[in-house]
Amino acid sequence: MRILDVFAPNRAEQIELVPLSVEHLEPYLEMLGDEEGRRLTATTAKFDRQQIVDWLASRATVSNRKDWAILTATDDFVGQLIFQGDSVVRRLP
Picture 1: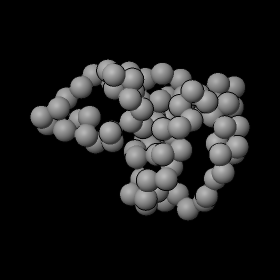
Picture 2 (picture 1 turned 135 degrees about the horizontal axis):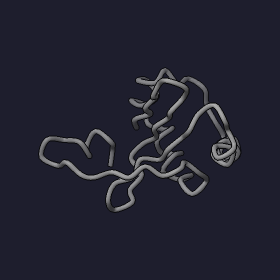
Picture 3 (picture 1 turned 45 degrees about the vertical axis):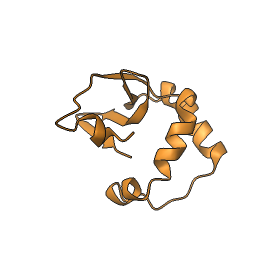
Picture 4 (picture 1 turned 135 degrees about the vertical axis):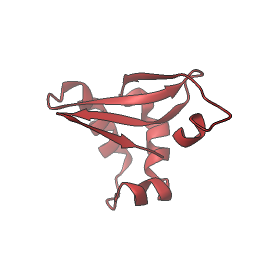
């Protein structure tokens, strides 16, 4: 499920924000592989699994931003939300 599906007019669901972590590895890898999401976020780099594991593991200790996993009411991962300083960055699959 994609985050845009969650907010479709006929399907408004509640979402939950939880700290992004290694727990979200598999759906995060899937999100990174989504070509439309990569295009919308101008992501051109390719990452291997270990790079993503290390990056997700570091999220809790980063002081200049907060990374959140966006989950549906059924705990489906649908995206990432980043609070960084005075801005918000969304990563949509």
